[in-house]
Image (cartoon, rainbow, N blue to C red):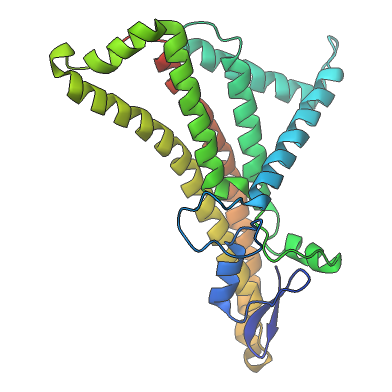
Length: 294
């Protein structure tokens, strides 16, 4: 939220009815707390009764904006000299099509568009991390919106990436049944990789493999985006540490805040694109493996 210093401590401008963080620790914790339907912090590590409303909202928002953008580009497509936007989108589509063709050996009618959607959607969700840390909180305060907490990066909330990765897990199982048949898939679970004599061990190993693929897919995206978000919050603290008692250090921290923030934002663009590409590629790899017999 919008940082200010009151008597040498970190403060912020927040939504209606919310007390500003009194120190740096509370500032960081506040920025890493999701808005839930209860309006309070989640106390337990796992609580399926809690819904992170901000994650749901910004996931849907970026998805809708992405679809509207692609629809706008599709309507502007021309066979004459293409615009820069059309050229960029066509290059992206061709890249995804080539990757899916080389990895998935089968019907790609659904998988190739899925991969394109995943890449574009994850890029948009990751890009929310480039919005200044305290901008949304400042707007919430300006418009007197009664929100205690707000996190705007869906992929920095573990529930978002894991939800997507478990959806991929469902597709992996679906294509395994569709391509190999129920009998073929069950036989593969019990016989691969060490033969039917090791059926119990094979089953446990294959179930762990399916679960590990799904969890690692989500955790990789979450870990990188959470670290990026945390670093942005820590950099924002440098600009918040203003004190008239030590003006020289305050000016130095202020300059460091802008320099470090700019450098990290530039580098973070690479992280945003790379993580989206990795998530898309692993999705193709896992769905491609579901098309193959072992």
